[in-house]
Image (tube, rainbow, N blue to C red; front, top):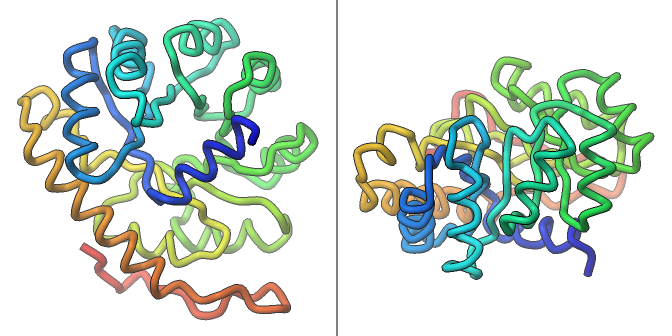
Length: 237
């Protein structure tokens, strides 16, 4: 199984990719432990803060059962840095050919960010099959994902940005959404306040919602229509 297939298999099981802001090894380890207690063994450690690479390295070393990756990767040298630390996937806010190429050279999964049909066409030209729609809520939420799915059959989405417990289910009801990226269960205030029990509780709640939604999600229709999906009025929390 390739790194990309391994990543997709893991996130398809969890349906949630927590976007973690952890500034060092100790925070990274505590967040990873809290996520595991919350039945959510995935963590995207964003490079927005100093110490994120140390957090990745610590989690990769001490919690191999956690699928740890790096987010906000915008340069090829950052790919090298996080892979050497133990990251198993890379997520970017936008689409960079150089970042995609380096991730493939290093043998890790890559999920580039897209915001327009033109971005998606460039991604497809690079052989990308899963993209991060970012920032998802600002771009139109689930309706934007559904609209962008139509002209690009075979493409899957990992919407991220502005997604919370109330609307996560609306995204997951869409056939082409493999998972959502979100941070309410690992809110930076909880991390800085060392409220690990609350992170576990929110993670469990998120997993429960995801499981409930996936049990309700319509099976793909033979003509490609996934059927009726949840509406913006649904509250999944």
